Length: 289
Image 1 (tube, rainbow, N blue to C red):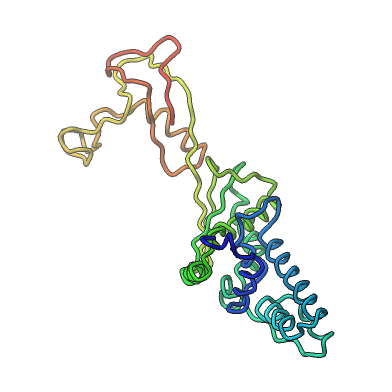
Image 2 (cartoon, rainbow, N blue to C red):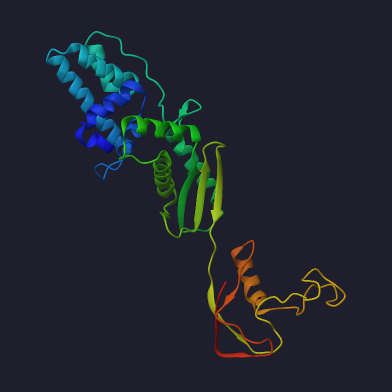
């Protein structure tokens, strides 16, 4: 947090809440790199609880004005129920709660939408065969800018972006509902939620098939060989086929694989090449599709 190592974390949080309405999730996210085995929501609520305890202690120690100031910030900008209860006990009506400055989109928190989005993901992927997934999102620029401004104002360097926080929370719900694992390196599918358009984009990552082929007859090229006269467009020289040879090893292997995988296309890679008139015997030549 820049020079905040010498500042009290609770003082920083109180200053933030005095200026901006922040939900538990977004307050906790500003300190995401501090401590472990917890969530940003728990971090934020814990900070608010400690602030309310501190404020209650101030009131009971004679600093009624200072304590009520903090409780009012917690009840209004922090939407923290216990603070409102303490204010009532002191004979004052608590302020109305406010929407979070960092995650409110069209009068609703983006984190409050994760259950509905997870249900849409489950419905959209029910006909896709996959074992692992990865969640991504396209955040609203305005929300990202607000968070950057807040962190610059309070010199905060221990937080994480809203994007990462949202991806993790949505991913947890999808993982629990589907019983499938999130994979951050080589996932079978990538699901991207667009916060701006409220849309889902499902990207199916390539399937790799390894094998070996044997060529027992001559005259078949390894890859598609287009007509050199027309470049594959079709001409008199090739009889309008666009091909110099009608078939290839790549197509004999790749087309059935594409069909089985219900893919949109394929790429064939053989380990080395052989002349068109050569045979490939023995254990065959390794390939990847």
